[in-house]
Image (cartoon, rainbow, N blue to C red; front, side):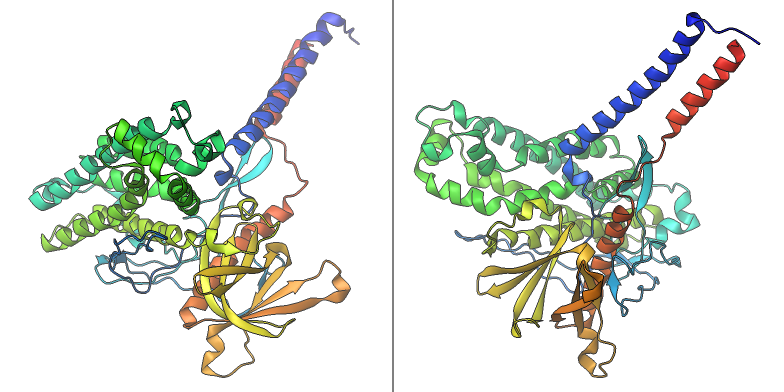
Length: 511
C-alpha cells in the first residue's frame, strides 16, 4: 500500500483543471469566431449556381432606377463524363443519403464551346473543439460542378514548362493587365473609402446620412471587399505572377471557400444605397466638389461589380490565346478553366441576388436570418390549397425555400418552407413529354398522423432547369439532414483525450 498526501494530489488536480480550462476557452473563442463570420457557419451548406447552358453578351448600359443584370459571353470549360444523380425520386431530409455516388473521370481538354458537366460531391467534415463541423463552400456543395478531370489526370501531377506561355506577348500582356488592374482596383477602393468612409466627420451633414447605420447602408460592405482584395487576392497574384498554375489554383480556392460571397451581400444592399444617394443627391454633389473628386460616389460604388465581370473576360482572352498559340501546358489550361467556371457561377449568383430587395409583402419574415442566398429560378406554379396559378420565382436560402409571385417589376412574397419540412418529387406517373419539366413540393407536418400535404407544382420551361434545380436543393437538404442529426451531440476532442491520457501516465509513473 502507499500513502497519498496533498503534494501528490495538487499537481494532478491542477493538470486536470488546466486541461478543462483550455477546452472551455477554445470553445468560447470558437463561438466568438462563428458569430464574427456568419457566412462560414451557416447551418446549411452552400449551393452553387447551375452551369449556364447559354450566355449573353455583357450589358453595360446602366439605368437611373435599377441597374441592368450583368451577363457575359460564352465561357470555356472542361468537358466531363460524370453522371447526374437520379432526381426522379422524392428528396427530403429523411430520404437523402449522405454517401455520394462515386464519380468517373476521363482526361479531357478545355474547349471553347460551353458545356454543362455535372458531378455529385459531398461536404467535408472536420472536428474542432469537440464539435463536428464541416467546410461549406460553393465547391463542396456545387451540384452542377463537375470534378475537373484534368486535375485528376497524371499529367497535372507534374509541373510543366511555363516559359512557352510567357513567350507569347499577348498572353504576357493579359497577365500583366490582370495584375495591374487589380492594383488599380485596390487603390481606387482605398481612395473611395478615404473620401466617403468618414462622412460623419463632415460639417452640415444632412439628417438622412447621419449615424453609423446610414453610413453602412450607403457604402454597404465595400470595406470587406477591399480587405479581401488587399490581403488575399492581390498578394496571391503578385507572388504567383511567374507561376500561373499556382495563381489560378489559389484564386479558385477562394471561391471554394466562399470568400467572395461578400459581392452577393454588396449587391443585395445596392438598391437601398441607390435610394439613399438619390435622397441626398444635392449634398453629395457639393461634397464631391469640395473634396475635388472627379468620379463621385456613384462611380466608386459601381467598381466592385465592374471588377467581378472583368475577371472572366480576361481569363477568356487568356484561354483563346492559349489555343491560338498551340501551347501544350495542360495543367495551366486546366487550372484557368476551373477558375473561369467558378467566376462565372459566382457572377450568376450575384446577378440573381439583385432581385431579393424587390420582394414585397414580407411582413415580419426577415430574409437576412435565412442564411446565405444560393440561387433563384422561375417556374409556372400552382398552389394547391388556393388552386391559384401564377408565375413564380423560387429563392433558395440556406435555411428555407421562399416562393414569390412575379408581378411585373416586383415580387410578392407568398410562402416559405424550412428544409426539414420539405420534400420534392417528380411526377413519374405522367407519361407526357412535360413530365420532366414538373416538380412537386410536399410539406410534411410535425404530426406524423397527418402525413404529407402537397402544396405546389412547379413547371419549368426546360427539363434541364428542373434537373439542375433538384440537384441544388438536394445538396442543401443533404447538409440540413446532417446538421439535424448532429444537434445536441458532442464528441470528445482529441487533444483532451491525449491530455487526460498523459496525465494518467504521469500519475502512474510518479506513484
